[in-house]
Each structure stands twice: as C-alpha cells, then as structure tokens.
Length: 164
Image (cartoon, rainbow, N blue to C red):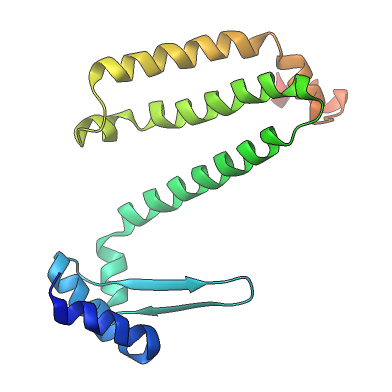
C-alpha cells in the first residue's frame, strides 16, 4: 500500500469526513468498486462509505449475503462455546461439545464446495469432515430425547402432524 495512502488513513481517523475519498482510494489500490467502514462501540455505531456504495452493493450482493450468513454462523458458534464453557453441571459439557462440534462441522460440510474451489480444503479432508459429521450424528442420536426435552416443548406440539 502506498505510504501516502497510509497517511490518508491516519488523517481520516482524525477527520471522519475524509473517509469516503480515502475508502475510494483504498478500493482503487485493491481493485474494489467501493468501500464501507463501520465503527462500533458499546453506545454508538457509525459508518462511512464511498459515494458509489449502491452500485458496489448491487455488484457484490451474492458475496455480501454469504458474508452475512457466515457472520450469523460465527455468532451462533461463539455464543454456543460461551454457554458450553459456563455450563453447570459439568456433565452437560460433553453433550454440548458434541452438539457444538456437529454445528461447526456441518457448516463446513455445507460449504465444502467453496473451500475446495478456493484451495482451502482437499477432497480427502472433505470426506473426513463428512465422516465426522456422520459419527457425531450417531452419537447425538442417543441424547436426542433429552436435548428436545431441554427446550420444554409441550408434548402436544411434538405430537402435532407437522412435527412427525
């Protein structure tokens, strides 16, 4: 990245009105059609973008939706791990760990085509993940009733035609 652009980034951090132009220049260097910067804190969230952000979103809509889904999966996994680590009694932890592993590996398995296309996973590793998902499903099967019961779903709902 050119040194002058690094200087502009520092300047924009002190003068936020410079961000749209700075983001445009960063996009030019990276070959991106536009850019967006979000700054969040506990009490405030602000954002700046390049003037052509509508066009940029239109060009990258599929990728942005995939990114949103990936973020949701990350949040679910992060919260699952937090709950799992604080679970009481400790006897719940192995069951929760299996469920957490199953969720994470299933997400990877669901998107394995993308990982293989981009060289992040081999066919051998993909097959190993599928086998591990199958193994975890078999293990979790024995705990299915207790896991469903933990949600407190009334028996009438479980017996409804839609649940069968």
